[in-house]
Length: 503
Image (cartoon, rainbow, N blue to C red; front, side):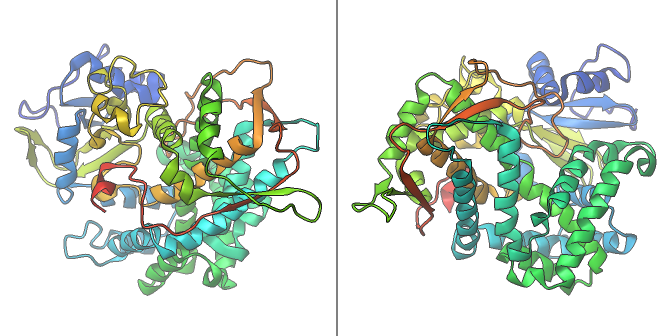
């Protein structure tokens, strides 16, 4: 075992099998394993031993808040640097640049610190994010126009794959601009081939042999990005892409490595939005009567033109900003979907021997804060914690739910997901306009939730193991309508997490 167990450390979690018991549990139960274990031992922090290493697992919101305040000694950037170097296949030269002052011990400078700052600046609510949001919203509107069946006809599709393809294009056009490398379907397919093989790259023995396909796919995507940068594509891209690129150029990162790191950046912008939209649409439609209630909210926000278009169609306009201001049930159902389906884990590295709540945390050990432990805690959320309750996050239900700090879908503290506002706008645009325009029923007549056991290591939201086949028709009475989707500026921000309350 990794250095043995010091009695001053958090208590060891019991294991049914010596040495390999927890490893077997992780393999069998995946992201549910930590929640299962937490229920068994009811401790705010415990230690699990794995072959060759051990980890500390934090299980309560108050202790998580303390961990987040200790971000220098319980640090995330060193872990992300290792993850990025392995996943992206960066050169030794680029890795050395990324590891220099990786945790900001010498100040807020260096490739790691300045990259974080650039992303936060580009993705915070305001003009830069609005510019990116508007491109994304228009692409979502086009995708839904293309989905419109011919009058009186039905479209049959796999819901997840349809969403993945359309969201991939909408997101990457918004981020990378008109020379977006993902306009090439071969590059899109290569990215998802790479994403599906992340685990084999991360932990595989001899990955050059065991992970040949995902590594080859990664190379294909990074080559496309190299061409993109060489052709000046980033000059017409979003502030996010431009600012991130400029930081790397300023630090002398070789172009090959800038391209490789951008493949990793694509993971951040693509992997979790599709499953979020998928589960939101699936859960809303499979909850009896909910879509009808949501339509009342959404319809009240739709502006219908007084005059018809030249071809006799009416124009209906949906403003995503208005939805966030006037659709509390829609926002509550979205947050509940994330509570119900997120399974991400916030990870920290112990940088030096440290005491937390009287327990010794040893240097070099990993500390985990699995969101699913918090999101599935009956003492926090009530007896219906395992159920999807779309009203759970309504303002009037605040007294019946725990503090905002217990909602961990986007992590928290210094590593709070900077893209949460962009992702929220994208999911709400897809879901709200879909509900306003279409009827959707499952092929076979019964809604079923697919299993999620094969969810990828980089995912924060559960990914379905199989698609859900659906039939889509135009909503009755909305056959002769032209739709406009927009997003106006607003001083009001939808506070998704406790950190947003003070903004």
